[in-house]
Length: 133
Image (tube, rainbow, N blue to C red):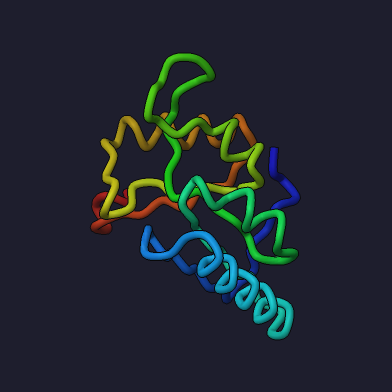
């Protein structure tokens, strides 16, 4: 598991959604990496799946998260996001239940369990205090 994995407070999370990719996103990631080191502050950068490896391979300090992960195991799942794949690409965590990719409470629970099994940290979004509970 990721028992030694820690995010210290305060931290900064940046989610470019799908507005940036390729060289533009890499430039932003490298800048965030420098800021993270300069200010000794953790920065989470949640990136599109296609950018995980490039960002993880070219930064030292930022925490690269996938923007989503499905709870599926290896096998069938066309068009889904496999946890093993995001981890192999270099992600250390995943964001779940973003307002632009809502999940049912059942699916959130399954995805968290799956991420835990794979040693991936989770950042789970919620619309309300009731949803958090």
